[in-house]
Amino acid sequence: MHILLIDDDISFVKVLTDFLIQEHTLWITTNNLEALNIFKVSHFDVVIINISMSKMNRIRLLKAILKENKNARMIVFTDSTNNKYKIEAQRLCVYAYFTKQYEVQQVKETLLHIENEINCI
Image 1 (tube, rainbow, N blue to C red):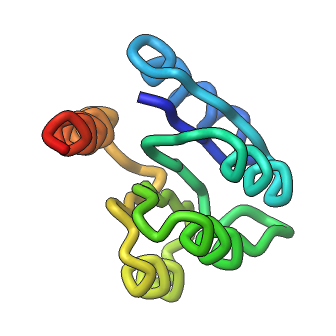
Image 2: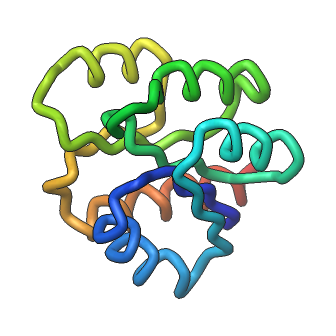
């Protein structure tokens, strides 16, 4: 699958990259505008985004991505315990929502589920 990863936490990106790159094509960015531009010109099966990144409004980016493709499959991560992000992400119908204290296996299972959906279409 083609995955766009949007996060500015280098250690978190490394953990995700270590297992994503084994089976998927991965693009990584830390910048909202760059992420949206990449999304507009390339096909991605999944967008993985940290919505609690400092200094960047990720909810606005989620909305912009959905405006480009209302069927975009988004997996959202947050390191915040503030439920406002979770509520907003659910309102936007994200595919999955995790805190950064996630289990890698949960993410792998979510991606496998998405891959199975794509293959059934």
